[in-house]
Image (cartoon, rainbow, N blue to C red; front, side, top):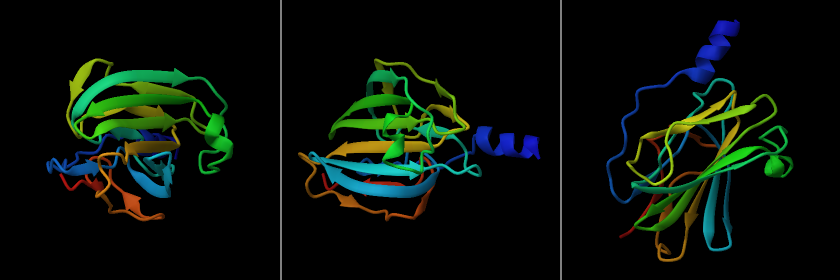
Length: 172
């Protein structure tokens, strides 16, 4: 049983990356927990269950500008408001549509966020960002300014596949 649980967390599935330059893809496997517009940005939160692979992917081609690690608590990631102060790693990508951020958020069981890439590196959509060991939630933040006519193609409660499911379609 323990081996089966660990396999679910640590497996790295083969993915078919969406090559459309106007598509921003899901940075992880999981279920869409929230979609919000805050401060001229779109926030999409993806909750990872114990049955999901816990690897994360680059959502859009660009330059990994920075990685910011923030210590914090380890509350249940599905409790959106309570997990605001959870431990996290923020990856900021400079892209042709502005800065896109992917936030790996540790949860109640998770205690380790492992980055696979380092800052100041050109990255391609679908490259592995890292893994949240026994991880919990991944947020993606996309700027609205300059992208006002983009379309969100997912809904709250929908299951998404990392690197494969298109979250946002740009009209550029």
